[in-house]
Image (tube, rainbow, N blue to C red; front, side, top):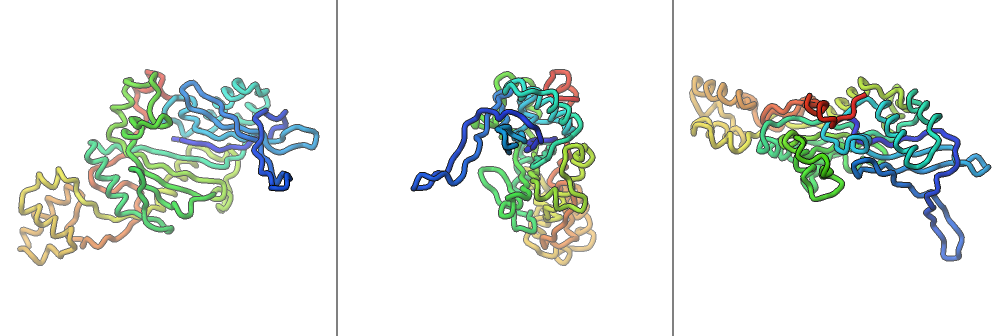
Length: 342
């Protein structure tokens, strides 16, 4: 789903009255000034930032900048949503133009044709970990066993981050537990009261959210640059998501969640723990026993025939702690009007 957009429209208009931010030197001279951003509030307390930019020399602005989360702006939540950029932008602009009293006909035509610049895009997908314990296990595994060219994964306040050091004007990856986010005390994360107890909390409980924030510099330096909205089809957004997910390198082996470990027969557990320590299990038991233990552990995603040497792989699917599979929008969300669908 598209979780955030940063867009720029070429649009000659009277500047939106938002005030200015200035830097004034000690001698009173103005070093620089910039229009402030105006908050446009959606139906569910989410907002978009907009401002007029540029000038034609006659007091009119030449660009409109908008920045915000279209899913939350239109739906009130981002548990699931659309990857169809143009309808999202068009519907968002309708509300912005109405609230800010901006002439809309020309802008909406440009939105419909995808004639706007994409300065930044956040693409997010959720994976079903089946239980809350498994969701925590995957999140812990990613924090300890994944990295990018920029370095190891960094964890902060329950969220894993990739490419933190190089993210400015480039890209940032992150993973977090969606169920915990929407039940957060932070007003910006938790569900609006109107959307509580409609099934979103239960649906999110076991979800891992993996999200990539991608910015203009990444788009324009591609072999085939991505600049305008009409280039960002759902197919291109899908390709972008897996391209950046493949940049996250991770161990091909996974530690098993503690409840699974405790439920193992003692002999199988001993073989698993030896493997965890990097010991060659094959040399410590008979051939039939080794293959019997290997067969048991393969069902849990561990192959004790492969040394636990933390080899890395850029395989796209989530590592096996339990099967964490991408999850789409449930049918009941359409029936309850909880998803923007155009």
